[in-house]
Length: 397
Ligand SMILES: [Zn+2]
Ligand SMILES: [Zn+2]
Image 1 (cartoon, rainbow, N blue to C red):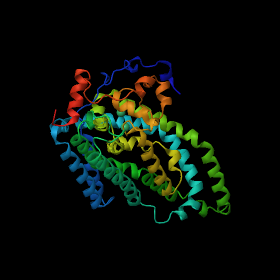
Image 2: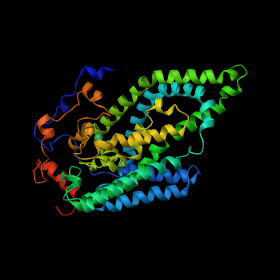
Image 3: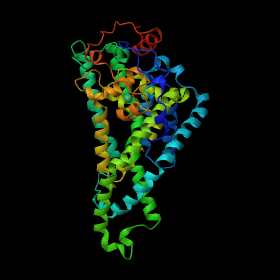
Image 4: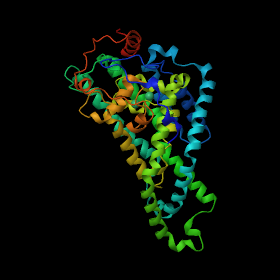
């Protein structure tokens, strides 16, 4: 798709076979909460101007505070106020580049929205609210929280495949419970952005449609062809969906890889997600709100349906998409691609393997290694990794 294709990156060569925790990239950083704090302050500001409710801010900032408390051991390393301006500058550069890339796709999406809105908007019933979406997501997350706490409390020794790997953040029962609780609460902060992505996009489209007077039903000649235009738009949308999906994969890959190759961005934004070296399902939410803001707005094809049902489906898909990858060693091997990214850090940046293969960062475990039983936790990783793993495992190290 561009010239990056011509020069595969040698530094992303796969680790030597058998290396459980090879020394690759920046591994586990301080897990900075800087970007979460920025988001917390932004949410307070939004409430102050009346854009969102105060109860939501109380919930978000409360979750952030609980997350910080659950992670108090090394908090002094994680908040660096002096570093914030530089980090924000770097972040806005990445955001700007992504926005420039996405603009044509959003323009196209807006044109399709104009054709669909007169028919679909009236079907938008009561479900059209952020609270419904966020509440639905929360139900799923509460289910997984209860599931994991139950497994950890009562089945830790005989948990089967799920927690067979007692390492890193799952090293001891206590550290695993702490990690799951931490992931649940911290995840609630960033997920606000995920759930508002379509709400905000459609609200923006609708504002433009009304302020530019582009309502087809008000047009003197087109108003009798509303249904034909709607079906024509649906056909174009379906025909171009796959084409519109491509920039999503590419931008996600580029943004994710930038977060890994730029140390300040990694430390302040992305490293928090990598505290789950052996992630659980709930780690699908431990992503900085800023990172969510970049990666969740990359699907204009999905935003096209001017109806919140799409977002409900999208949320289920996003959760299901993380199901195999953020669960350790389950029977679902399809998500191994992303699981390997969590274990090895500098491979497999893409949502799917294609971009990684194209740009030289693909890694796949040799068949024997993939099917071999995981070490019991007594294996000795290289010194630096041992330090990082110990830092994650809890005080009992
Ligand atoms: Zn990553
Ligand atoms: Zn992940």
